[in-house]
Image (cartoon, rainbow, N blue to C red; front, side):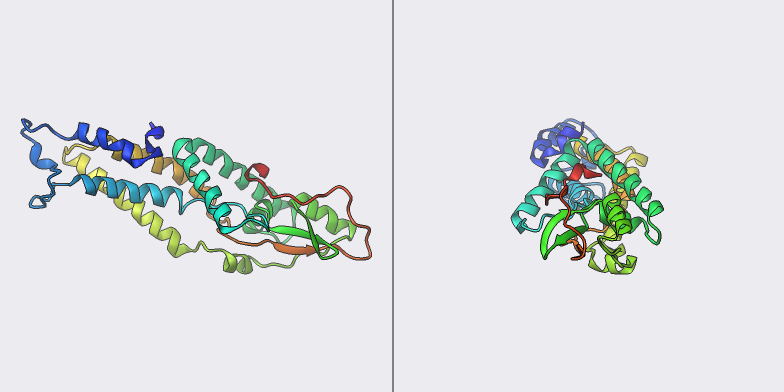
Length: 256
């Protein structure tokens, strides 16, 4: 059913199919003519707008992408995020798998490295530490690589507090709260209509299913920084020979 979410325009025939016929005695419960004289009356635009706002809140604003490459422009970043949003609409189970892998990887990193929190673990697995050798970017470091280089004395452990990471993150409690309120408002509307035995469209039912599935990665990513533009620099010590087994590459979404 989630395939219908790929585009709102595809839902319009289903919405019309869900509307009562002119001979139906319950036609007053939903009217597409635009009249608002009855509290139960909803226009076609009201249905599409409510579902679109909920789908947008549950996909575009909920997605916590990894840190982009240092040469990626705004257009590339926007396209990558749009692709992730489409995946969230078409195959939300993949989003849940991705978020779950990052959650458990971040928790493992927080347990392995003293003084780290889940936020530090998420930052590391999303490409948050970029190794510089002789002033040039060399590679993004996983938590295991960072810890190994620290033990070898090749780099210093970055001293970053959770507050510093959250300060660079663009996702705060307020923005997350707005998304939750939008979802709660949509769900309450459907619950109220069901309690009053009023009909619902296929668009609304499918939107509810997608919203429910996207709540899972939203919870798993609650401590993950959002929309950080550049990673933290980790400098290789000049007294150590440069690493030969690392080459710079963008940390792909499947890293964690």
